[in-house]
Length: 466
Image 1 (tube, rainbow, N blue to C red):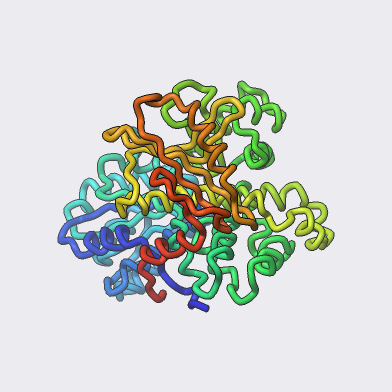
Image 2: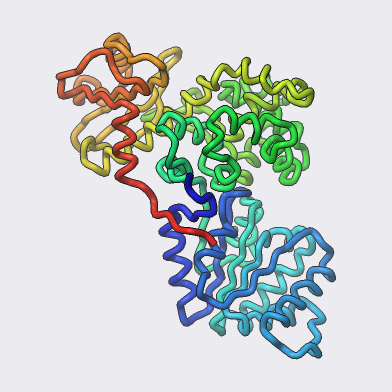
């Protein structure tokens, strides 16, 4: 079992930050992303070897924050105790003496007292920008952080020298948390927890897949049992409505009308909630069927595997779980096969990008496609060579037969892009392999074992932390 106190990948971000920390000029860095995504760990890891001061913003009133920050700053800088920091302007003017200053959960300053951020803007313009200070502002409220630093009307707009939006890790990164597990188990772990490192640090590989879910998610005393509800209560004013919307999407209600009907929300009100989930929380996104236009080819999907899992297996069975009926919910879930199957599709897409990198295929676009009751998991197209790759992903316990290929070929005939002028190829992904060996060069068969080999080749950089 690997030490879970590890720092995986983020190589580009670490390199960028270390270059910034070593520069000879003032830098104002904005780092933001969803909670638990690894923002603080990234900053602390990248700043190893540099002098720094870390200031965490909670919801205390401004006077308490000022006293706390002043005490930390004066102690860290070994300044005389007699120095009086009577306001935030005086505090900010001390920052250049620290070298690197990290303000974590920075958006709370805006919520507690917007004038503090305005004061920082003034001090930055008049003094800090002329120093060699490295000011790193970190935040979890994605929408608010963008409004503070990136919007044209934002107080810090035009002053930020580097922006890093931290997103979930890829499947090939998450595999590193489970070196002793089978590839099937790794797919399961990723399907449940997604690419959030903090979640995987909670799981214990020695327990196995199902036991980890029992102890660390379904048990009402476990750390992840109330994770989603807690986040929505902290980040939204109407968590019940947001939960209804996410529940709708998790159960396959992917169009605007379907979501409104399932969640019993007026269509005139739904847009604002979807906008918050999409732009502020990054929990949903809109996908468009490949090479199509129009609303009928749009779907809303949940971007987080864990949120999708939570709304499928915890939210609807909360009463059972509160009574300790964990085994009953596991019986209902039946191995979580539909959920894992959906996540497997996105792992296949990630594998497609590696195939593209290896020049085993060549494409410029990839996306899902549907037309009425016809759906194709992925279609990748190469506009230069007029080639279309039609992709089917199967998460089954038995090898798949030739009939899966035949159905895919039939469905591909409905895809209108350069019809009768393109070259068609077919890629079949199967967890358990195939009942036949395909000799046609236009058909590619990829088993889970084949995927494992390529993912092993692209193992991420792993570092001990702290």
